[in-house]
Each structure stands twice: as C-alpha cells, then as structure tokens.
Amino acid sequence: MRNKLLLFWQISAFIVLAVSILSAQSVTSKERKTTKVTEGVYVITHRDAPDTFPQGNTIVIIGDKDVLVVDSCLLPSSAKEDIAQIKQWTDKPVKYLVNTHWHFDHNNGNGTYAAAFPNLTIIAHAETQRMIENYNPMAISNYPTRRERFKKMLESGKDNDGVPLSDALRKDLEVSLVGLDEVVAEFQNIKLTPINISFTEDLNLNLGNREVQIKFLGRGNTAGDTIVYLPKEKIASVGDLMVHPVPYFFGGFPLELPATLQKVGLLNLQSIIPGHGEILHNNNYLNQIIALVTEVNSFIKKETTGNPNLKIEDAAKIARQKIDVPAWRKKFAGDNQENGDYFEETFDGLIKSAFKQAVIR
Image (tube, rainbow, N blue to C red):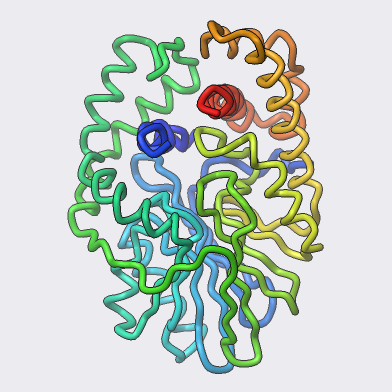
C-alpha cells in the first residue's frame, strides 16, 4: 500500500507553524495510464514513485490556440514522459500550468515544463504560491531524512503522535525505505520554478474556443485549493480536495472541507477529476466524503466542547467507540484489503486533523 500519509505528517508541522466505490480500484498506482475525457481533454494517471510516494494526476486541456496543464506531478522523469505524450496529442506548446495546491507531488515537475516550454506561465492561488516558495525547498531538501524518521518509527513502534503503528503502516514504512534512494537521486535535479501569476478567487482564461475557469471555492485539503473548471464541458479538476478510492485525511482543514465540497457539487459536473485516482462521473463519492467528514466534525465538536484536557490519542480511541468505522470502511474500500487497511490509517488522520483544527480555533 502506498505511503501517502507520510507526506502529510511531514507538512503538518508546517501547517502548525503557519497556523460507492469499485473494490477493484486500489490506493496503489502501479502503472501509468492516459484517459481521454472529451475531445482535447486528457488525464494522465501516474505510477507511484519507487518509494511508494504517490504522484498527482496531470490534466491536459487543449484549445484552438493554447494548451493548459493542471499539475506537474512528483518526479521530473514522469513530467518528461508526460511532455512527450502531450507533444503527440498536439503541436501547440503548453502556455499555462496550474498548480492545484502546494504539495510537491503536484508541482515538482514545474521546472521540467518550464525548460520544455520557455514561454510557460505558471498559475496558482496566492496561498499556494506562498507555501510553495516558503516550504517546498525545505521539504525537498529534507526528503532524505525520511530514512532516519521512518527507522525511528519502526524501532519505537509509534507514529509522530505517539500512537502505536498499525500493521499496515509498519509494512508501508518498510516498503518505502527500499525505494527511497532512487527518489532522492531524482530530487537532486529538481529546479524550483517561481509562480508567474497568482489569484485569490477567480481567474478566467480562453484557450481558443475553450473557456477555463480557475476557482478557489474554500479551504479543505490546503489553504489554497484550486478548481480548474470547464463550464461548457462540465468537467473539473479538483486537486486533492478529492482523492479516489480512499480520501487523504492527514492534514488540511477538515472542519471546512464539507462546505467546500458542497460548492463543488453545485457545479453539476459530468466529470470530476480527483488529485489521485480515477475520474468520477457523478456526485456519489463527493457526497460520501461530505457525510463522513461531517460526522467526524460533529464528534470532535462534541468531545472538545468543555473538555480542554482531552488529548488527541484519547479522542482517537473514543472515535472508534462512537463512530461506526467498519461501516465507513466498507463504503469506501469494499472488500479490498489494501484499501481497507489504508482507510484505517486515513480515518485516524481525519480524527487527528479535525481535533487539531478544533483546538487551534
């Protein structure tokens, strides 16, 4: 099972400093795949990095005049492969690159695109721009220290919050260590490329007979979550506000996530492209995420109100007594063991993230 949550454990420190599913689908991505959503709109799903780190989806939108790409993924080698693919789809150069949020599995390839397309304009929400500039250089340079941190967790048998490691997480850490050196080698060649244009609410572009609306609908996964919306085609890329088939809940703003996702639902989309995973064609999964997070938020509000001495590890234990976790696991993971194991981890992450946000408030 891929080691997604460790990214968010790594960046959660930064946040504190700044303040129905097909069971055949898996949280692990072992192959690269391209999908044509409609004429001139493609999605590239990447294989996981050698250390199991996930790579965000890349979306390619081709107009009569210009090409826009959403997210440049984690590894420069994968970004080069994507660029070669884009050149097969069109002879037009990529004019715009949008970063949906600041997590580097969605923007480490920015420099690779800038080198291939000298006139490229990179677009991001102002908060995403700030986070990329302030934190991503540190995250990249600190990446090799994952070896020591992972080994420490394995030796102690506890995660960063002092909670005992699950069997699934222990296996995840062990597999990640095997492929770490290969990823570190690639990271040494990453060129951090500045954002050219930032926005705070909306930015509209016309690629030539193809309108693109770039929107901020609210916080959820990060403080600058960006939606790239095609109003005519009713298609949207939503970044890691949604991840399929099991969500990521290891940071961010869970107390605000339901309201943000409800705004996504109001767009009445025919195709929703998540930050990771398969394309969705209705609001069923979106509503399922809203329902889970809403229940957890209600639980956290009740448990923390008038109880200032409640500890995060106690909240995690109480949650499993008062919330029907097996039922939620079944809804998201079906009978897929790997997805189910990952759900257990992400559910714990959701409890911790909601608790931290509630206490900070």
